[in-house]
Length: 287
Image 1 (cartoon, rainbow, N blue to C red):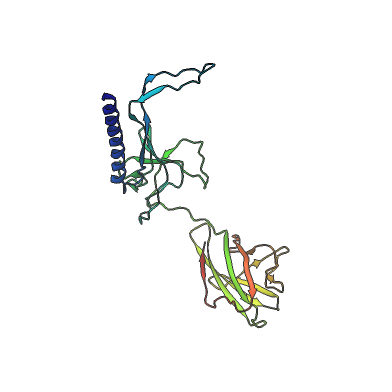
Image 2: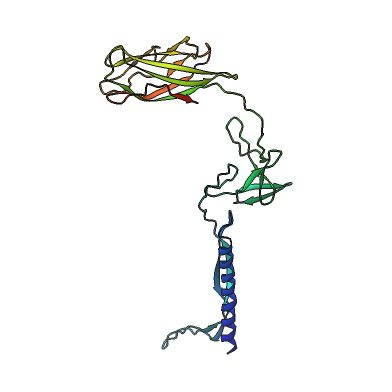
């Protein structure tokens, strides 16, 4: 009688622990970065009533007769399955994609969390809203992250400006009208470029049809001054298309701005097709 009561009580206690874990999971349904827990069980000791016997020449062996003494909690595990990211509208709210943790620093101690509810303090440090601890990581140098270096606390230099970098590449996409007249048909495209100082330039390209399969390209700056523009090797200002409207001129379109800056224009997606015309109004592309 005592064994049955003990086994029943152990079951109630163990499953009460499971109910506690389930209740905690439900309570944290909206907790950022929370990972659900689960309970696993294991049986406890067995009391042997009759031992096993070995087989003989005239009789087979028998298994032991045992009575289980109940159940116990074997483990409470954390399930680290990634949750569904939710938009918040705040640029400092972050979510971890896949495995990994955010690192928080408290002195020399490193703490790990999946809750990416961060904000910038008055000094520009990225901190956890829940604890105020600073977020740490590897700062990129020239766009390269060296994970062999020690991690540093992340600071966003609010109010500081980044030196301007000259435009090195722009992209042209679209179609030239294969039915345009010769040499009247033309299409104008504009690209805004930036030099390595603080000045920007608007470069206007004009494509003029010269034959059924060729177009010439010219360029002027915002003051109407002609710019040197060329494509291919040897350099030329002529774009050649095949009978299917595919650009056959190899190389990137290049234009000299300020006499020294040579942005590269990727014109691979420029096609010569019927009934597909670029708009006549200028289009500004910023790179």
